[in-house]
Image (tube, rainbow, N blue to C red; front, side):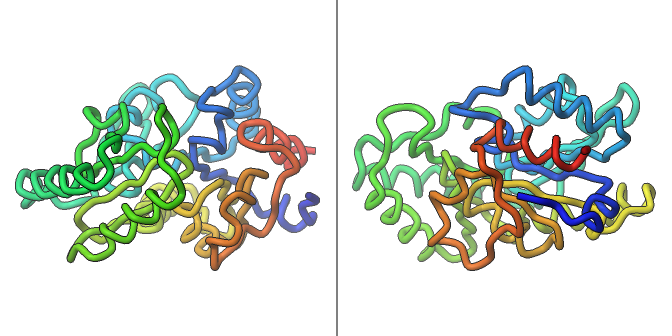
Length: 256
C-alpha cells in the first residue's frame, strides 16, 4: 500500500469506522490511541463513523482525541465543541415510539425462526435502531442464518438493514452513514475549509461500502477481504494488517 504524493498532500481529515477498523478482536489498544493522538497533533480533523449506539458515542467522544462521531449508521452525530458535546439528531423522532415497537416485533418474529438469535449487548444504549449480534458474543449465527435475517428484513416496507462486521442493524428512515457525513461536510467541513477530497475514509465491512464509493480517497483494513465478494464498490487502498494494526499501518505511511 503506497499513497501517491498527491493524496498525502490533499488529505487533512480521517473519517473512520470503529469496530474491526480501529479495534482488533473487539479490543481498542494503546497503540491505536497513540496513532489517533499523532493525527490530532498534526491538525487532522478526526471523525468516527459507526453503527454503535448514541450511548457509546457520548462516551467515546469524551475519552478519545476525536472531533465528532456519527452514531447508529447516520441517525445522528455528536460534535466536540471545546469541553462541551453537541448532539444533532438527524433521524426523525416523529413516530419513534411506534417504530421501535415494530422493530422489536420484527426481532421477535425472527427469533421464532432462529431461537438463538439475540440483540447486541449495546442495544439498551440505542435511540433509533435495533442491532442483531451475529458474532460479537457467542453463539454466532451461521452464514445461512445471516442471509435469512437480511432477506426477511429486506421485505419489510420502510426498513433499512445493513451488515457490519459484528451486527445486523435495522431501522426506519433513509438516513445512512453517507447522509451523516454529508451533513458534517456541509457544516463542520465548510467551517474548516475542507471538502470530501480532503478526507480519507477507512472501513472494514459491507456497511462501509457506500462511503468507499462516496469519498475519493478510501481505504480498507485487511479484513475487508472477508467481504470482498459482497461489495460492488471497493476501497482504493488495502492495508497488509487487519483492524487497528492496519489503521496504524496506513497512518504511519500517511504521515511519513
